[in-house]
Image (cartoon, rainbow, N blue to C red; front, side, top):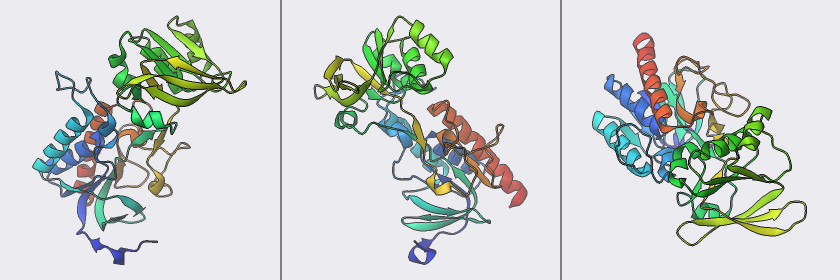
Length: 317
């Protein structure tokens, strides 16, 4: 186990933000504008999930589509300009048993009077070669984010739970046709959701189908290679886009046992603010929000967390 003697120690920080997505940068900006000494740790994926998002059309303030990397770069520049200390480090272990809180990283150890957890959640992927190749070029894990780009196109949704059914129904607002691919012969989604799915004329379901790979022409998705799980018959389906909807995984492994989490690993926070089960530790964004998963929602929660951390320091500093 790594000990603090192995790394250089940073002076005690007012607010330590862990994560560099919309929630993290917004939390850091608000805390820094309140006059606090703020350090933001980027994690291994600087910019969070938006780094792999090609275009964003629903973030306020941009009349033209903005790429995920461009939006996150603007947030980073704004945070730096305000005085946030941005450090490219990955936290491997935390100790929230007493203040100041201790966080142990690859490059240094950090002590902070407050911590804001903004580590996000990542989509569960199928692990296919074509999936990796065509992310952002026809492969997506967010219909709300990318559905608009498939207007009058044929798309497929992979999964059988509530998320997959909701994504399929939502995509009918744009796509010419939606095919739900499920490896079993019954869905796990709630019955009312299934009824809506089956009643939609734009949606068809391919049962008992395993996805072998996502096919493309080198620049974009062209179809799916499938296999019937009962007959082992291989076949292909022509589509312009593929939405993987098999769930999300919150990045909370290092916080288990330190703050309260639900059965799926999401951090439990107060419904009206960003407080977690530990006083002085706050959470914002997808790490505590399994429902909406939108950049603007994460940014809004980051704002709340930054304000909450400042208020906590005003009382407990």
